[in-house]
Length: 446
Image 1 (cartoon, rainbow, N blue to C red):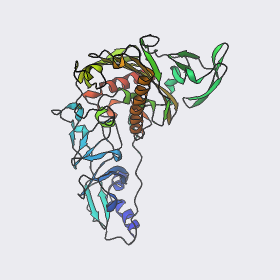
Image 2: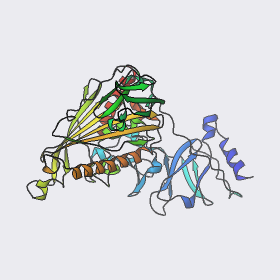
Image 3: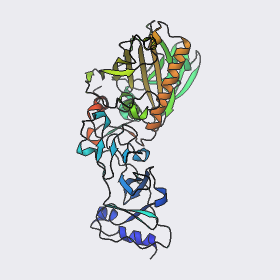
Image 4: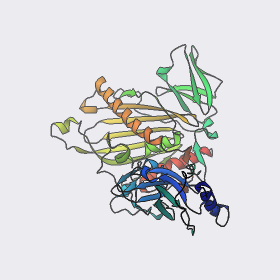
């Protein structure tokens, strides 16, 4: 019997349609193609990754997504005989047991829901890797006479609860950035996308207008804002804007396929630095995230955290009057849906870096990202020189690129609002607050 028909026959055995779909043995990959780099596969309608946790070792198969933020583990890496998620460094052993959550610290214990599932059995035979998702009495077929039929990797399962995506109907009732002020000259116009629709913004003698007409369009914080319908959200206040002590600079706007909700969650995340930003500022020895508080506010929330960080550019470090490792106060401020701010105050050196992060949900698969830096006292100088500003902007652009590269791998239509759809730990309080804030906004309670 041809192997393709053999596999089909094996899959048809079981009790009920669901059981039959996952019963039997499934060829998923050539043995030679499975290395220490995970390979996404499908078996019985289920998604797995297959990988060797040591060079030349046996094949391990585990469920395809990290339970924390649903990251596809095809992007994971093998570290010390475990599979490490690229986002927050969660590690899983060959049985799928989560053995390390770095943000919990060395004494932290992963919760049971952190474990991955594994198929009932994995075998290498005839140069192929075979999986049995469920217990089966069916024997592996003999050496095939032709290339086995491999099923495609199934799509990611949809969250059980609502998802806040780029075309969510509640987003009509919000202020959205659609351009930098500098992008629209006097007498000119811009074509923009917002919430799956096209708009033309004009700057004329009477100010800003849109075609088709919007509820309102205005200019604030160096940005042009558009509200399709009467907004029920709150504006983000930025005290540094217009303060002569601060020097402002904008990154070039970036565009990504990642949904705005995931980008906002990433901006607030305090546990991914050692892994996503290992090449820039993520400190490998600062993986634990101490407990912190989040304070609800009208239309959003704020959080103030005390952190330790290395400050090699501080003149006081260079002349020996201050230590390299210093104290920093990080203040996060959020206003729904996608207005975010991070203020970093160097408590020993006196410098302040404020990052304004604004998101424009253009289409279901497109978000435009606006990032502004407002700087004071960098390098101990009252005035930030142009070359210093350029260096700070270039560094922030590199950091943003690291985040966008990770988010591009997420393969999600938006941010799940039901907390049970993901697994949250102590370090995720800001992310939980974001989900609750967006849930309130979606329900008209913003």
